[in-house]
Image 1 (tube, rainbow, N blue to C red):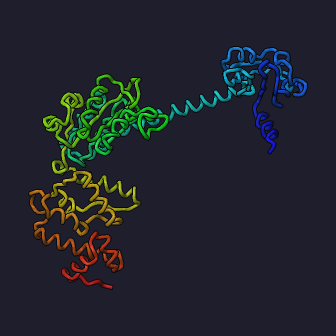
Image 2: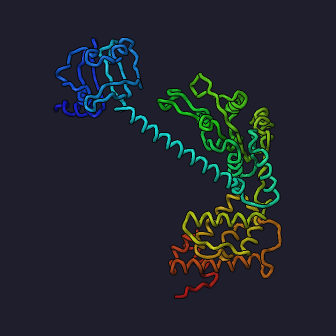
Image 3: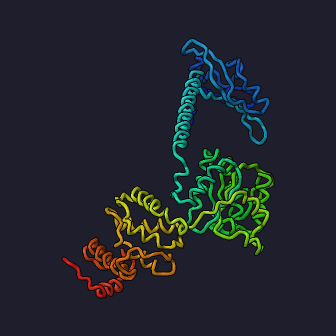
Length: 464
């Protein structure tokens, strides 16, 4: 196949393009260049470039062996009968250490194109500044603390503490049981700080194999270990440079890695796995744990010096059972969330259901409440959540996690309420499935044989 027409067309696509040999004699000149100079290619092949273009600097570039990028050049354009200025890149051609020729190519045909490009870039910069200003205004209008749902005294105290220390740059330790929402509080700390425009990076120390955690935190150089990417990889500390890094479940970090973390916090620099060059990082550290770190120190599983380094300020997030007054707000928040996500129209939640929820100890805390609301929204996609949908929650309450409070309904015992709720839920589900017992059992989360037994036990007869 003959590639000459293809190569010729490709080279003619450039504004100006010329190739010279090792003695600076013209070997090729594309059509746009010959038109500017008002010459024919066959008339100049083999001639010294200086005899055709006296102002060229290509011979000097070849003599130096170094490329000259972005140089300005002036030529007389015979097509327009005027001088034109353009940006020229001159590059020596080197093979096996020897200069075998040179090439010159213009990036822009004339300076007007550069001014136009500069104008476009300046316009984009102005738009970007406008976007940044808008984002900053929106950020100021939205208080990150509003995303911490609850008005209880305990939550109010934590919000006040966050507002005081968010912009301090001090390391914080968030403690609390699993599911209390420690990440929500960490995010509020970041968003309220001067680092909010930079990255908020999260890593769960318990979710990553211990032998990989170091490279995840500090990154690695290419070839540092078997399976490492050729170009290496940056770690979470570099990714969070200028921003905030959340180390979740810090108590699960291996002791050797704790020593390296302490050094990073003291020196404010990291070294990638397999690397030898320290890399400066500016990171605000937030740690969280559901463990008793002082007990881990006594057991020799956590360094005392690291504990005191990360525990400049401790925020103890209370479990949901200690902030039951926040349940109505949390329920409404989650209902709105799932309505948006699922396109449902759950209207709200009945006071009887809220009273029931405030008797439960919530061992899974806010996360468990969120999952309960998600299930209730599914069952009540176009109505208010009533007690008849809460059979599964009543089953939970009949276990060990019921708070010692007065019954939610004085009219009957908890067992009677449970049975009535179970009957109502079964009937409601059968209506939703048009009497399909197999489908109803799946929605109820029970085996079909169990559903048959309950139908018999409660004398539930399907109506046509």
